[in-house]
Amino acid sequence: TIIIMKDKTANSNRVIFYLSVLTSLFFLFLYIKNVYLKLNFVIIGVLQELFSILFLVTQPILLVFACKVYIKNAFKIKSDSFITILILIPSIGLTWMSFFTS
Image 1 (cartoon, one colour):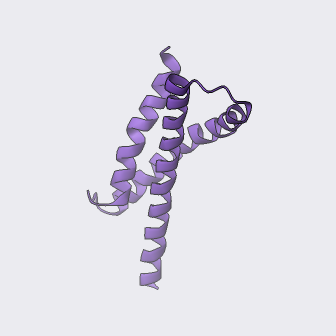
Image 2 (image 1 turned 30 degrees about the vertical axis):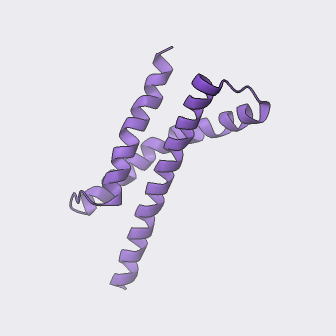
């Protein structure tokens, strides 16, 4: 059962990593769409509104889970949780800073 538990932890850690990459890529796409491409298609706007609030709420939750796993793994630098934290902190910072800058 110990091997199975390590598998579940590794899988959940990998899921947190992939979700953090997905949310960061989503906000990067929004930035590129608004600043460089200036696309105004209705379907893109609908998808943007649907997923923006979901991903805004998801990012801090993923950061908390990644920090818990990072602490549980004894602060290993070569872990997925550490990379997840390195992805999420700048992404959350830039996302929230975009609300206060024009």
